Length: 83
Image (tube, rainbow, N blue to C red; front, side, top):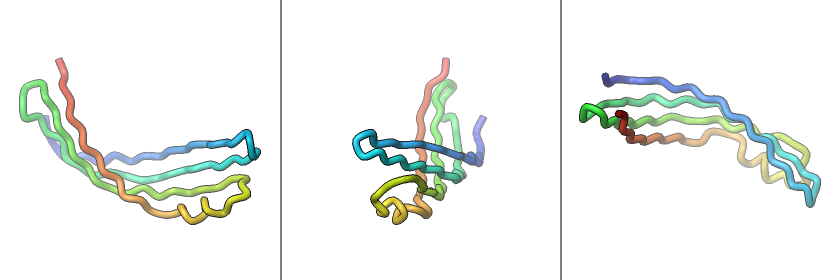
């Protein structure tokens, strides 16, 4: 078994700082395209590339989080063994 794959993803994280009573939420949406192959009977390898888009929001005194909205590259390399 080998072949092309598309892997969509959605992520949500909520971070809080109890010292400053600040909270920020990070949501990302993205996708990967890649190829997976099995060079041996039980050994698997895969390589994928894509992009994620990040949205930052929240109650914070620091506006620097707004600078991080936007696209970021995504790279995936995996190896595995199944028995």
